Length: 464
Image (tube, rainbow, N blue to C red):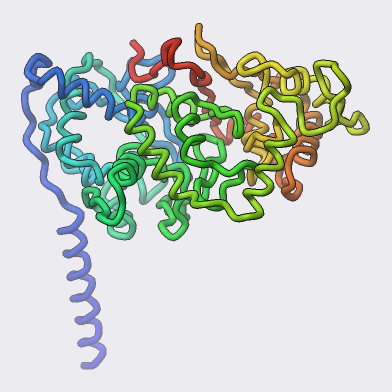
């Protein structure tokens, strides 16, 4: 009798939990609409949505290589398999043409599509949930006025049970906390504006915060560094590996120009982010810099002193941290090691040339790359270089993937680490090189951002 009651209670508990989960996971479809005419949207609202879409970096994920903008099809590698981004043009059959604004807002705020299916968190609705309804409306107006493109996204390739949309509800139950951004009354307007942009549309934490085994951001380690497309996304808080501490002015300059004389150039997936932020007004960019500078906090006395010492011993035009050789154009680093010799032959001609960016390279003692927690970013840059933005002044560097063997690359990055950083020797260099060469990291390579907006910022928002 006791056993029967126990089994009954277990069955009842299972039924109750399953029922509750089903109620939580189920969402009804929102009725389809006829695609509205582009002329029905307020042009000013569309322009505002254009800027917001740039802040969200929407084009970068929703545009495959050489494909039409926002038509999707880009493969997003994850630890659970591949997810393909969807078509967000107003095409009625394969895009969001039949989505009402309410359906669009539900996707942004709750991660549920028009048909009621849960969206995979590769779409960062855990950040977009903070966006206000007014900004959602502007984004909707912008996307619904783009050129419709018929393009079906390839099917996702995910392991069981994550290939079941229903299972995503469980992930949300554990990690997703919906809610529009609430200003902090104890902070000023610039800080709050920056927090709204950084935590919301810009979703900076998606890359700069480490993720747990289920792919969720570790909320107890915000901005302590993460990964993005085979690159290390450096910590933005006090753990930043930059040799010179960031401040608000440096952050503003970096976000506006894509490089800073005391830190180096944006590369990898940060390059299109910088391009897209090029359309922001100075006030918004300054607000983002204000908030990120607050995340970093004031440097410790030791870090501040080290930063000042590096700035004093180097120049932004790359004379190098070592001793110089009279009036010659380059310094002469040690030639006693293979890495030193390779550096002298391949790196010093630019990084110690005394020529300003983009004709010369920054002094590597100032660059974050040699000071990072892994060799990955330095390896990527050496292998693939910094492709230029067509016709614009931008940081450039040739790639040496064909000219340099794995052994030579290992010797070079080891030498650079030893010479330009106080950090311990990198481990895992050989594996990082193999992963980068074989494509395991699926390294994202993008044109370097322009250094001079006056020459015309290349926004990658739309490519047709």
